[in-house]
Length: 174
Image (cartoon, rainbow, N blue to C red; front, side, top):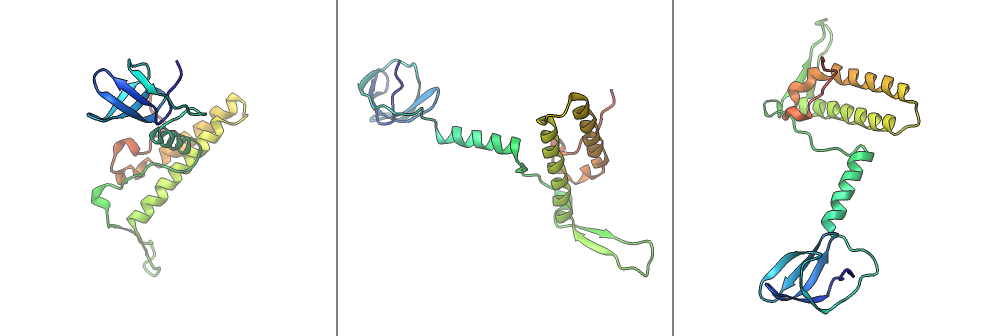
């Protein structure tokens, strides 16, 4: 079966006459004169009135965008949006030294939270680089354990995260 290109005209028993407006690996998007836009399986039954051919396989913008998002998530330090818990929004972190003669420091808690999530993102990138490296398996395991312990050291900051699924997780008891 030859794949129809965008602009091909078809006649469907249920929807009538239409034009292929998008092609994915599994579907044709067809705009029908009477029924508007419908999605048909590639192997659906219809008569081809006039076929146009594409020189290359056609994929939808959605599929390209989804693939790009997955690649960026896997291979870069671009990360998901992490939200601070509502009770901390607009708050500030106050550091007071033990010596009253020294000046304290105030920092917007959102800034501090951003720095914590950046540390986490960089640990994740390091983890991916270790996993894809040419190190032998024992070295990979050893380095992974250091990263896991680092996550464990950061669990004190989990109180700042809005979603439990985005919190730090250290080594779990078995």
